[in-house]
Amino acid sequence: MSDESQTRASRKDLVGEVTSRSGDKTIKVTYFYKIPHPLYGKEIKRKTVFHVHDEKNECKLGDKVEIMETRPLSKLKRWRVVRIVEAAKVVGEANV
Image (cartoon, rainbow, N blue to C red):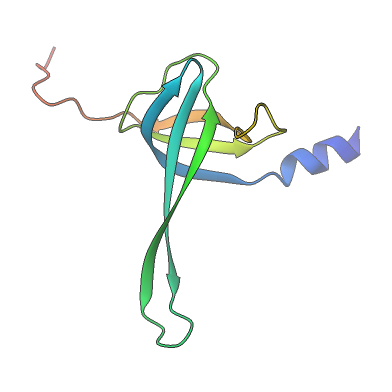
C-alpha cells in the first residue's frame, strides 16, 4: 500500500488553459512556460498541448484547470482533470 501512495504522490500536476473540446470527455489543455535561451539567457515563451480526460464534461473553453498525470487512457490521453481553478469569463453576462 505504501508503494502505491508514494507513486501517486510523485505524479506530475500542472495548471493550464482549456483551448479545445476535442470530443466526448476529451479536452486540449495548453501549458505555457518560459525557459532561458541556452546562449543569451533571455526568457523564451514555450507551450505544450496536452490531451486531457474530462470525465464529467464540465470544462469549457478558456477555463484554467489543474491536470494530473495518469496511466494511458487512449492513444494520446495521459492526463486527467483534477479541478477547475478558474472558470472562463463570459462576455455580456448579467450580474444576477
